[in-house]
Amino acid sequence: MCQTLTSFQTIPLDMAPELTRAVTNVVCSLCFNTRYKRGDAEFETMLAYSKGIVDTVAKDSLVDVFPWLQVCTFTMHYLCFIHIKMLTILLLCSAVKNKKKYPGESVKDLLDALLKAKLNMENNNSNISQDVGLTEDHILMTVGDIFGAGVETTSTVLKWAVAYLLHYPEVQKKIQEELDAKVGFGRYPLLSDRKILHYTEAAISEVLRIRPVSPLLIPHVALKDSSIGEYTIPKEARVVINLWSLHHDEKEWINPHLFNPDRFLDENGNRVYSPSQSYLPFGAGIRVCLGEALAKMEIFLFLSWILQRFTLEVPEGDHLPDLEGGSLVL
Ligand code: HEM
Image (cartoon, rainbow, N blue to C red; front, side):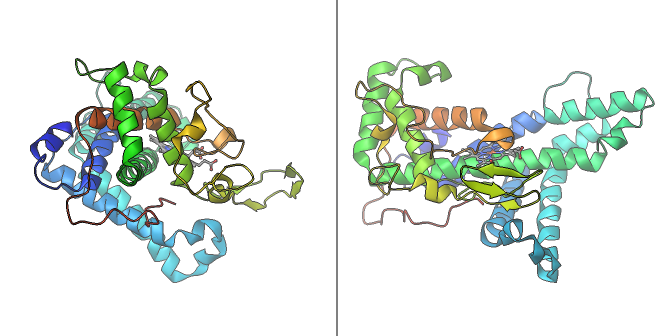
């Protein structure tokens, strides 16, 4: 990505597809041990299908909150559409095609691990693979879930980060000053630098607060009678958490609509990981985001590598990006 940015230094470049490409490559190597170059035909087709899914989910995901909508024929068509698109993406991927034919010996990625587990169970003449859902379809859909959950979320956060840095150049400058002082130019930022780049980390936390990609988390169902604070939650009740409201609650945050990374720093400039209980960008409890650690690593590395070398600006005569935007994932 940095090579692309270098070659476009004097020409305006839309960062959004570049960020999506970079994040998609991380998830591709995690799932299939494959990486693609910019412009690769297979990769560009996958990205186009992926965008189609997100456009549909982002606009019409009401069925997750109101399941009775499933009775509508339209909704069923919509779910089939998503399912088919996701499978098409995976089947397009040559790595998946090859592995389905020749599952290798060593485990290099998620697909290997699942295929190997299925093979082991079959060799042991066990019916477990059927019982626990390790059919080829389940394996494909599991990889598809990680693909779906891992690409759009992280790339959307990066896009919001770029949008906010354009609106708040003083924040961008402070991050760059921190990078200059603590990392310098002799090497790239490393994950271990997260411990010392407090302001950069605070800015990332603030992006996750002000624009949560999953403003209603994921709808949950109570498995037994329960309670949250003073509220009684009967078994089987659908629970939707309004994360947007928690992240913009005036009782918890001073001027919640202002982008202010300093909320995540103490008076000595050290990190405050969670300044309020109303901060849950990755959810909480046993269904907390599975990819939280990976996402935080990716966001840190991509942003710090970019800001070490480049200053982001809107081309002369162009508008700043809209901060109201429609880029919510769920
Ligand atoms: C900045 C990026 C990300 C954000 C903000 C995010 C946020 C979330 C949120 C809010 C949930 C729902 C939690 C709940 O309802 O309590 C969730 C679930 C999930 N996320 Fe993420 N996520 C991100 C990246 C990722 C990545 C990179 C992966 C995988 C590679 C991933 C995999 C998952 C999975 C599998 C679940 C479902 C967990 C379950 O239901 O048990 N996420 N994520």
